[in-house]
Structure formats: C-alpha cells, structure tokens
Amino acid sequence: MNFNLSQLSPNKVYFTLIQAVVPRPIAWVLSENDDETLNLAPFSYFNLVCSDPPLLILSIGKKRDGSIKDTRRNIIDRSHFVVHLPHATQMEQVNESSRELPANASEVEQLQLSTEPFGPFPLPRLRDCRIALACTRYQVSEIGPNQQALILGLIEAIYIDDEIVHLDAKGSIHLDAKKLDPLSRLGGEEFGSLGDVFHLPRLR
Image 1 (tube, rainbow, N blue to C red):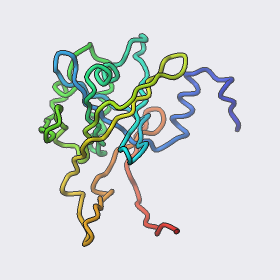
Image 2: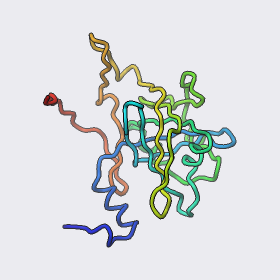
Image 3: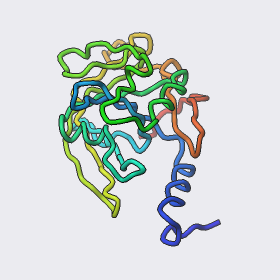
Image 4: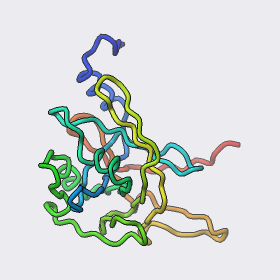
C-alpha cells in the first residue's frame, strides 16, 4: 500500500510514522522546574546528530491543550538537562513518567527514583540508569504549524555503568549492548527490547 501523507491528517501521519520507523531509542530526560524540583519525561523523537561537537537532538511537541511541555520550557529557560537511556526493566517507570502532571510536579519524586550527583554538572542523574548524558542547550528551533521544537543538546559528559564498559589494550571503549539492555519505542502502545546482537566486520 502507498500512503500520500499530504492527504492524511497530522494525527494519522504521526501514528503511521511511529509504527513504520522502529525501533526508536528513548531519551528519558531529567530537567529542573522553576521551583528546583526535578522533571522527568520520555521522548522517542531523539537521536545523535554529530560527534564534533557532540550533539544530540530532541523533538518536543506541545501538550494536548497546546501549552508548552515542561521539559521544553525547562531546557529553554535553564539550559541544563540529562538524557538517560532506560533499560528494558524500567519500562513501567518510563511509561508512568509520560503522564501529564501539573506544572512543577516531580516525576522523580512520584516514582521514588533515586539520583546521584553527576560530577560537577548542575543536575543529578538517575542512579539506576546505565547510561546518562549531561547536556546543555545548544540550539532551539521551531518547525511546522504547531511549532514543534527541535532542541540540539551539547553533550558535556557521559556516565556509563562499569558493568557494561571495558577498555581494550589500545584504550578504546567497548560497551556490552546486551548488558545495557536498552528499551526502545515501537508504534502504538508497544515497546521493544534489544533482542539478538549481530557482529559483522565493517567493509572498507
């Protein structure tokens, strides 16, 4: 079947795309509300963009009532945020953190999640996540009639759980993807885990 997206409503375009482009990594984003409580929300319109400078991208829409989402506002107002890559056993917590809560409500507190200092970075990281990226706002632009925000974040530091990383004889970093066990987003109400890992030498 062929679908002409120009003939579909934005809602149908959204549900078609999120089922077609899978799996998508989940950015579990911690930011600071204006009362210094911690906000936490998942986004799957997310990926890396560049390594020099090290940048990632988040695409954040608006709430159902058209107001600005807390994560978007926090990043614009205070710059700092932490992107976590949740693992599969955190699926229920990730899903719970997607609820729309009143402004300044803390998903971290409601879900009773523990945090750890993230070196000198102003915000903490979630203790039980195996990877966390300390980011500052690099650039924000708005696209489309609904003013979807494209947020580029400069990655200043990365935390990696000792259990999933090792250094080879040359000092190169290697991560164990199976131990990372990243949670991914599929279409509708579906999530995915990593499954099989294949090794194939890169052609040069």
